[in-house]
Amino acid sequence: MAAKKAAAAAGKGKVKVTQVRSANNRPEWQAKVLIGLGLNRLHRTRELEDTPAVRGMIAKVQHLLKVEA
Image 1 (cartoon, rainbow, N blue to C red):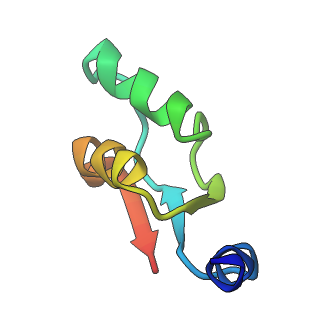
Image 2: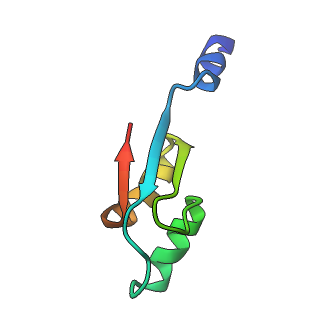
């Protein structure tokens, strides 16, 4: 069990997202999803844990993002 936690902490299970399109003239909820992901300006990049919750948020605004594994 401890080996799994150590492997997860070592960088496995990460997803890199970059905002490439603006949230202007988009529904308010899409801007809120971007803020939830830690993105609020163009060309900002975040490395996030690869969890179902994060994947769901990415799916909601995938047209505004560039996603790298």
